[in-house]
Image (cartoon, rainbow, N blue to C red):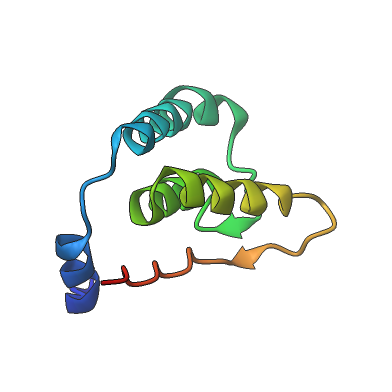
Length: 95
């Protein structure tokens, strides 16, 4: 695995997720652990919709991350080609 210095630096400067974000992360992790194996690999995107949601919520916080995840899941249908769709980078905080 490649060591990406910028990703590591961004992760170190990002504040810890708040309570709503942590709750959503636990729920999504539970889905990935208990429900997803029963359904099999069906996501037409990379990263998968659940991984996208985890990354979006951890990086953008609960409200924006949840909105990003919902809009991504709304695109997950047979008429969308899917493919590589990364989480957009978080905007820098205003000072």
